Structures are given as C-alpha cells and as structure tokens.
Length: 416
Image 1 (cartoon, rainbow, N blue to C red):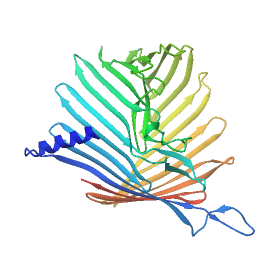
Image 2: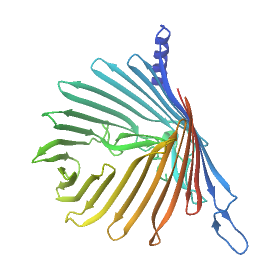
Image 3: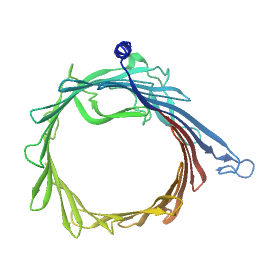
Image 4: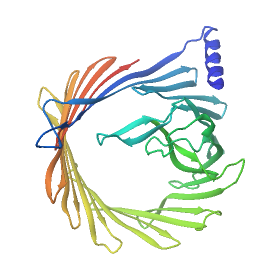
C-alpha cells in the first residue's frame, strides 16, 4: 500500500503543477440469478424444475480505471461482490529512456471453489477473509541492439489459495503466508528475415498462470524454491519461422538441470498451399513422441474445417465452423454453426445461432446440441439482448438447459 500511496501522491503532485490527466475506464455491475430446483414432499421426494422457484443471486461491481499523464499510465482494477472485497490490482507503466518500467501490486481476499448443499458450484471466502498482499511483479522491457529484452521479477505468496480449487484448511491467516522470489528473463532476436529466436530463463519460476479471484497473469514463483533459498534454474530456447521446401518449422529446446528429464526437445511444422490445405504436426524427443497431425482448410471463404489424425494417420476427430453475414435490410448481423465429430462416437456436438444489430439495439440466440445417453439432444438455448446508450450499455442474457432456466444475468456498463 505504501508504494501505491507514493505513486498516487506523485500523480497528484504533478497535477498540482497544472498538467492535465487523461482518465478513462469502465464501471461494470453484474447481477446473476441461478434457480434452485423445488423439493417436493409426500409421495415424491426429489428435486425437480418448477415454474415458481427461489433463486441464488450474485452481484459484482468492477471498476477498471486508467489515469494517463504524458507517457505514464497508472491502472487500477478492483471488484466487490456479495461476499465483500475481491481484489485490488494496481500497476504503473512508465517509460524511462529506452526502458519501460511496469511495477504491479496485487491485493486480494482468499476465495475457494466449493460445491454447496444445493449441488451448485460456488465461490466462498476463506475465513477470516482479510484483504492480503499477494504479489509484487516488477517488469522491465527494452529494445537494445536488435534484442527484445524483458525481465519479470516476482515476490509472491506461494501458499495463497487458488480461487478455482477447493482449499482444504478451514482458515487462511496473514501468518500462513509464505513469500518466495522468482525471476523470468526473456530475450528475443531476429537473426534472419522471418526467423525468431527466443530465450527464456526461469530462476525459481515457471510460466504457469497465477490467479486471484477475477484476475490472473502468466508467470509465477515456484513454491518449492526461491532466489533467496533453494535455487532452481531452467532454460528454454525456441526457434520459429524456419522454412524448408515449403514447410514452416519450429523447434524448442528445454534444459532443466534440476529435473529427471534434463533435456526436452520438441518441434513441429506446417505445410500449406496445396488446394488451400494446411497440414500441421508436432513431435518431441527424449523420448520420441509424435502428437499427431492436423489438416485444416477454408471452404468457399465461409467454412473452416479441421481434421485431427493420430501418429499412424488414423482418424481421431473433425470440426467444422461456418459463419456468414446476414442483412435483412433493417438489421445486420451474422449467423454461425459448428459441429464436432469424434471417432467411435459420431456427431458429438452441434451448435448454431445468429446475432442482429439495429442502431442501439442488438440481440442474438444460440442452440447447442450434444451427446446425452447415447443420442444427440438439445442441451442449452441462450438468448441475449443489448441496449447501448453511449456511454452506457445494458446486457440481459438467459440460458436454458434440459432442466429449464439454468442462468439469468443482467449487466450494466458505464464507459468514460
């Protein structure tokens, strides 16, 4: 919080000199309703859809604010819901000569994903529900002598609960936090026209995504090692854009001195141009493994087709997607359809829908079919209506499933 206060005071101090700020952002309010099945009594003891029912409701307010001065941008993202505060994300982008400096501060309340008594997925606060400092990320980027250099230094609570999973302990206190340090250095160069060579060095870190409630970013600190304690390092070199006999190739070499598999070599390629067909494959060495082949093409400028084969060229699956523009004279929009076929199952999924727009009003509907008990059945129907009255817009959405209404939502967005 001290760093955030210093940044805010600095911006206000500059404003006091008569400079002008550029303020932009959005304020969003989302309301979600999920019906609870009615429980019958007497002869029938079960939960069943009913015309009259009660709802589980969720309300979330999100503010995304950017304040710009000259080339510097201060960004704030914060959200609250019925359970209270979710997060406060504060970051700054500040050019310093050839260097672009991007510090971030993450504060969040610990949440977990659970299944409640009504068999619904729910997100609950882990007591005592304190707003905690979770992570500091300091990124520095520069282009020097033809090299693109980016360094990301992270100080992170490696035991902070993942909001997408069930957290086994019943509580999470400030004294439960464990902070580790990690660093990711990425260097990109272009040794030849069309070629891109990238070096990624991980110091007690990984490229895995790290998340708090409603916010995530790539890059995280290894929970079992730290720059200040047990140290680990790994290297990954990747080469893309290599052309040979009309085939575009890529290769990746990973070096992990602290792992059982010290070397990991993988690669792939794609060939195109023959009847607008593209063939893509990937492989790995140590041990040798071919992941299969993908054949893709575009038919009549409207249908995207993709067919997946195993390493022995046996058919595995195929997907088709078609999209076309719609013009009724009064309204314009688009229509789409998709289908998926899987070897041994046949047609496993089918969906289609359309969207139309007229002035400030837009709407759409979609239908999804899938395999259920051995046959293709209607799984969901979704309708959406949006009204735009600049600088505000309102969106209403209804999703119906096999058991009736599955979800209703209403969103209001104010842009400034």
